[in-house]
Amino acid sequence: MTVSLNGVTKTFGHRLVLDNITESFADGQLTALLGPSGSGKSTLLKIVAGLTPLDSGQVVIGDRDVTHAPARDRHIGFCFQDYAPFRHLSVFDNVAYGLKVQRVPRDERRRQVEELLGLVRLEDFANQYPHHLSGGQRQRMALARALAVKPDVLLLDEPFAALDAQVRSELRSWVRSLQRDLGITTILVTHDQSEAMEIADRLVILNDGKIEQAGKPSFVYDHPATDFVAGFLGPLTYLDGIAYRPHELEVGAFGEAGENVRVTDVTRLGFEVRVTLENARGETTWVQLTHDEARALNPVVNQTLVVRARAEHSVLTRTSQH
Amino acid sequence: MGYISLLVMIPLAALLTNAFKGGLGAFWRAAISTESVDALKLTLVCSFLAAAFNAVAGTATAFVLVRDKFPGQGILNTIIDLPFALPTVVAGITFYALYGPHSPFHVNITGSWIGITVAIMFVTLPFSVRSVQPVLESLSLDAEAAAATLGASSFRIFRTVTLPAILPALLTGTGLAFARALGEYGSVVFISNNLPYHSEVASSYVYSLVSSGQVASAASVAVVLLCLALLVLIASNVIGRRLSRRHG
Image (cartoon, rainbow over all chains, first blue to last red; front, side, top):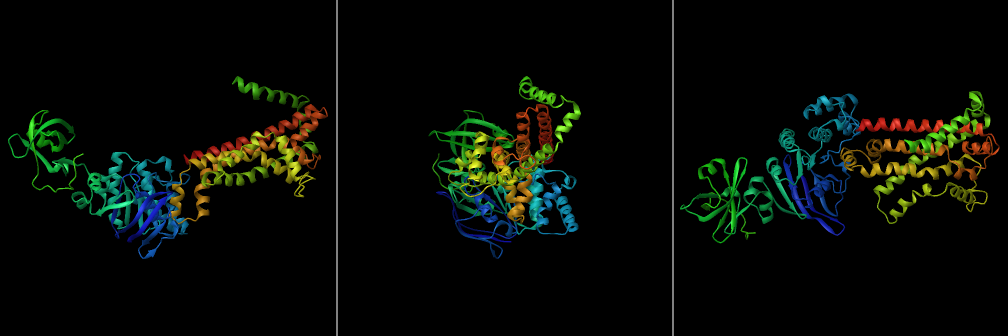
């Protein structure tokens, strides 16, 4: 179901947290609300959920204006960063909670909970308590609990932030495929740009209570509307005052076309090699080489090379060098 | 260990020695005399009522202190501990003045179980508030919010999410309040009128026995009181621990 926000504004005391946000979240899509901490993204999600009241504006889910509806009447599913398990209830009873509220008959409830536990691969943990589960399992339980009431919209507040790297990336792609299978409209709040790029159909980038840009991840990455978006979505490197993504610059041997530069540092970052360069005017820039490129060129400190923009480069915003 | 012995074990041993000086029979006769049984019964009933009432009122107070923001909150938070700091006799005299024969509100609850219960409630309120308060403070609001998104009403959220989380602490606090109430003397002695068989609590019966030189009988009643208090403490501890172990 489509979620529409119309002029949503929120202040905490004298601080304007959300400034007249108007945005639409398309049916069945996974949208990432991306921004640094303090950008207002979590507040916006909680306003959609009805967990935080707004000062002015309108929240519409499907064709229902829910601006003044309490959370329990909004038909949404919400997952928290800290999983928010009901600690005194078993995994089974956690998932069954919403169905019990809805007075689903016992046998039907059991059937549905077992199905959900199968979906999140926690069948064997039905009688365990949340503190017996790992972080990833707890978040899967929370997801099953939220999905049990067949919500119109799924809201995920930094759901992977508390997990370690490997579990995080596994759970991320698993949530992504689950979301596709169910076709449920999902809004995911995250501060992690790579997570947002990987998982989302669409990005909405928030900064300082305002939307900086919204669009497809690949488009926003290549065509950032503002300096903030350009810098937030990925690393930038500068050549002659123009910002580039690191892979958009290439280096060549002395004598080739390009600007002469001196190598000041070579750092191996696993698969890639980062080479820092300095030109005659003392301006520094850096490029990212693949292993093969690095082996062919074999850059060493104080060596003179040339640097140039690749032919197919997409010029980002024109910014002065920092 | 030596410290505990000095403070707790040795007096306890002396008490037991006194209680059983005349043998098991004398102990038993003193313990189950009509006056003793009536006093113990009254003490148990009033203590139970006071502890139960404080469990509710104390939880409500803790909620207000933790979840609400209002001017004067800090002062209220300090006042909660007053019953601990105030000599109980002072509390007793105050209650007698306010709700006694010369009550400015024309409410006289002296000599009744109501008066005794009110006095005990005053003295034991901090136990309930202070046991629940820190648990409430550390409780994440997210679980309550999750329940709300799952369709639960405020009352259902309290009953199914919040209450189970604070229950172990609440039980411990109530147990402490109950145990403390069993031995309460100072705050009760004025308002109760100390009518034997009628409005005499166990502690004041013990005092009257000592005053009339029946030290062994006094010790016997005191031992019964002690056992009851111990039983309450153990029970509330065991239940509390079992609950919190399940919750991890």
